Structures are given as C-alpha cells and as structure tokens.
Figure (cartoon, rainbow, N blue to C red):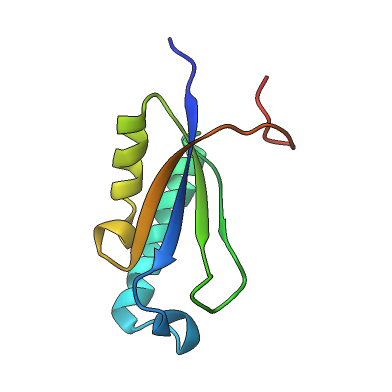
Length: 106
C-alpha cells in the first residue's frame, strides 16, 4: 500500500458577519456538522490537525491538515466538509508536508 500524502486546506468564511455578529441558526447547525465531520476524519486517521485563528476579521482562517492517498481524495474530503458543501466557507487545497513537531512523519 502506498504511503499517504499530506494536504492542507484553508477555510475562509463567505459571510464575515458570521464571525462578528455570530452565526445564523442555519450556519450554527452547519458549523456543528463541520466539527463532527472533522472529528470523524480524525478518528479515521484522515484529519491530522484542524483549528482556526482566534480572530474575527477578514484575516480569519481555518486550517485542516489531511492524510490522503491522492490529491483527488483530499479534494473530495475537503469538498464534503459541510461548511464547504453548504457554502458557509470557501476552501483552498494545498499539497503539504509536515516537517516537524509532534505530528512529524518519518
């Protein structure tokens, strides 16, 4: 079996007011599903790390580091994230390599 590659996807909210004024009821439900989705991926060894900056501005970003067998699989995982699929956040995928830290691979 081929070794998995790492990918990073960056998330940015499509509606800045969600950060400043708070999410709508619908956005809140989607954000809950987003966290559940990522926790599920983490349990399956696919999401290595996820989180967001603690800001509420146009510079706010979320990051997800994935382990995937291909860029196609990583793209599918990103596109299936509820916040991406439902348009609450825009996402951009990058090939990535963890070079150090407690998650570093040999």
